[in-house]
Image 1 (cartoon, helix red, strand yellow):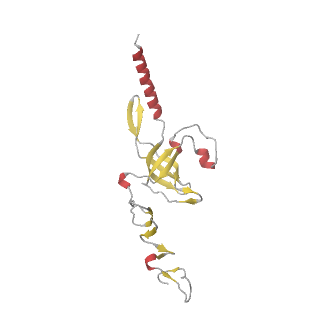
Image 2: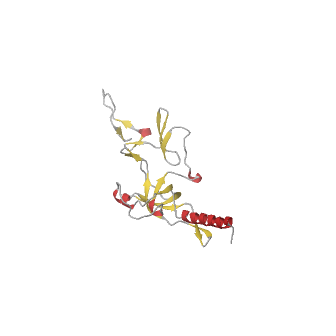
Image 3: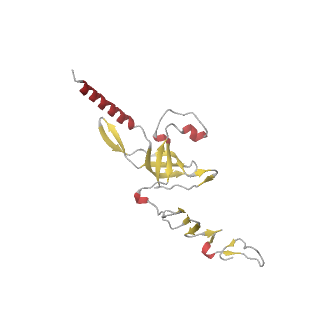
Length: 198
């Protein structure tokens, strides 16, 4: 008969192997790359940016996860206001996988029953836009806050008590640098911005 410590050692190894195998089916969050944007459904198709290790007969191999389709996007929105933008192919994101099936909630909102019993499934991801790898990092100011394009060449910055518009700025279709106002003699304020030719 084998000693107890040998048998319990084998049991511990079996438990560890079982837990490791189960962990392959649990997804929490992974970086991804947007492949396409569905403007009507407001969802993205995402390629997960990390290859998955798959155990097959005791051997680990790597494989790319199939494209995630119809992934809802997360953008800043609350209190009746939204900051919205159209994702483009190549944008990086973080895909977070819900604990349960989101299908019923996604279709109808409110509190819903699960359409299927699944947990941390590839079908239940949300794409949080705005994360980036080192090769795609944007220009970021050392202080204040900015709404800008990726190169930092145009946008709005707020720092301390100052607001600054930079880049090519237009007002009512007219370039800000050459804008004109209509003025009436004796008026206490100027009129609307005119086209440069006005």
